[in-house]
Amino acid sequence: MALPRTAREVLSLRALNRATLARQMLLARRKLTAVQAVERLAGLQAQAPNPPYIGLWSRLEGFEREQLTEAMRRRRIVRMSTMRSTLHLMTAHDALAWRPLLEPVHQRGLLGNHKRALEGLDREAVVAAARALLGEKPHTSAELGQALGMRWKGCETASLAALIRNNLPLVHLPPAGSWNSHQSALLQPLGDWLGSVEAPRATQDDLLLRYLGAFGPATLADAGAWSGLTGWKAVAERLRPQLRVFVGEGGQELFDLPRAPRPDPDTPAPPRLVAEWDSLLLAHADRSRVLSEVHRARVFTVNGIVRGTVLLDGFVAGVWKIERAKNTATVVLEPFTRWSKADRLGVEEEALELLAFTSDGEGERHAVRGPLSPT
Image (cartoon, rainbow, N blue to C red; front, side, top):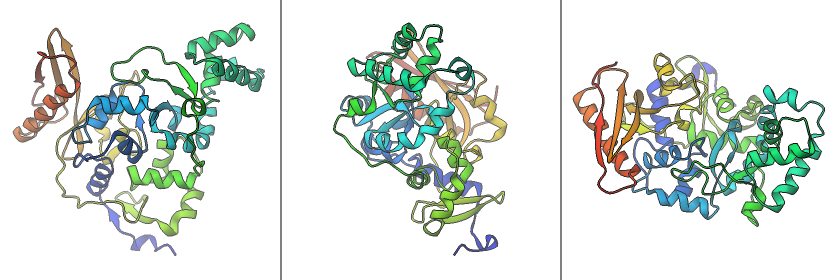
């Protein structure tokens, strides 16, 4: 039986921060394979090819880029649309288990601009035709749209391609999604790419447990923001007897796994450079556990970019980017507040290690640039 609200333990903002960083392997780098890490993190946001590599570098000891590239080549990790109908890197098992559950999210992706373009269309026939085309060989999204447009004349090819992307679980075949790979992805149905690999279909209960393991303690709104799914209240009520329930500083109900790590709020959090579009910043409706609303506009830009961030004492204290010129690579830092000397030195050390990780050539000079106070 649930305890009265007044009897529940209150979790401070710092307690939420440290718990989340512990789940996200940002309090200390871990000794895991790329596959183990992607599974534990419940996927990695992957709109662009390089951020997932940097995301693993910031979390794993001795991580090398080839480890992730090889895992994709060997079909142990796949790049495809999953949560929020957004590209993620997922383990093959999770992709098979989770993608059917996320079908409603992908159907909502056809609303808006595509809704009018697809009105009156026999969608099942279009999807069947696309499946036949993809059964012959992989195609890019543009190729699919153009081929279908030859049969369904007058339909916008971009909307036809969107219909297929949102109705079929399509893998972006390597080298798409690999380090510095920017060519258009060839697409193939997940089952065709993985062959005999099987996984039981996940339930929404399963998904909540995995979400809390990677991002908890969290509210049901947080679970919705991460996944794009609705209906979490019924899920939480079914699982309530096996969950810990806390209260946040604002009175919100926070669900968690009983044995998940919840470090002391005073646990030291080392400086970290977090990748662009990192799920740390995208997996909660309320991001205040890592990002102050005051700084949100400097991280989430008007053109849809989520900038790389600097964590100091566990919270976003600035942004970073890499600038490359002939034989030189520089991490440019933009602090949001004045940093102490110790913090600056810690960030500079991380930045130089990041440059070594991202370098593609010998003899490249590395530097760090950035003011000590806000610009």
